[in-house]
Amino acid sequence: MTTEKINLLDFDRKGMRQFFAEELGEKSFRADQVMKWIYHFGVDDFDNMTNINKKLREKLQYKCEIKAPTVAEAQHSSDGTIKWAMKVGDQDVETVYIPEDDRATLCVSSQVGCALECKFCSTAQQGFNRNLKVSEIIGQVWRAAREIGLQKETGRRPITNVVMMGMGEPLLNMKNLIPALEIMLDDLGFGLSKRRVTVSTSGVVSGLDQMTGKIDVALAISLHAPNDELRSQIMPINDRWDIQDFLASVRRYIASSNANRGKVTVEYVLLDHINDDMDHARELAELMKDTPCKINLIPFNPYPGSPYKKPSNSRIDRFQKTLMQYEHTVTVRKTRGDDIDAACGQLVGDVIDRTKRTAALKAARGAETIDVKAV
Image (cartoon, rainbow, N blue to C red; front, side):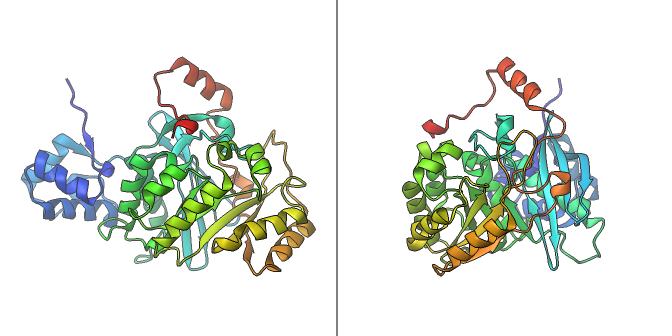
């Protein structure tokens, strides 16, 4: 009978030290040494950890493993963006690497599929399958660093920023999100600045309140409409937590945060003749007057079967200028990787189509589910 090995990527520093003490009978500094090998040097073979004694290496080989998602497919964009389909168990999630000048951002998934059913998002069309484990979240960063590290000059950090904006709603996976964020920030992990790790949420107020005072990272909110009526039409989560409830929780979070410097990033996807009228811009400006923010406009990226269109450049420009008249800081997101379906809102699994995924879910009702209204 084969005993399932413990994946060390599932532990943040506290968990790693506890495991080493309770299960291996080792001191905390040994756990720290192993973490450093894993995250600083990308080592997944205990035999290569040269400052670990042979007895402990043998114990680790017997009881543990370092198992990150593997690359099932890689697509390279003409602008340097790379999209990986990463294998997590028998499923795939997508991870996107976006290089730009002196920084390199990794867009990371938190779930297989998504439960929120936002009407304009291609990931939502897959439905929800399951939450990713800690090892599957942080493992995307680990794997990407290994892949990119082979192409970078020695000494250059392969990933400078991480954004939790891939497949899924991060705050519906709090149990695994928090330890993964801790590893990203930890000096024994990836050692990223808290201002360079961003969590994006569509409005899971209960999750955001759990984060408040617990972990400090940059916050981005997916708003996409200036009023409840329109937002409920395109984002059903608004029926659970309306805009005012959402913004109140945002203000609570940024009040306790140093990473956000007193401001939240508001993401607003522009849908042609849906939410991009000048009245919408004025309404949005008024809505956000009491919530310090910078507004990031995202021109919609069409995907097959989508009922929405990207606005014309003139409509985008007018919307931005109208907001700026109200003294808001407003940017328009540059589209990256759209030639490989890696741009925002286009994270769709290339291997598993919706029909097969839905059939599998119906056949496995014992699998994980999320009822947003019950959260």
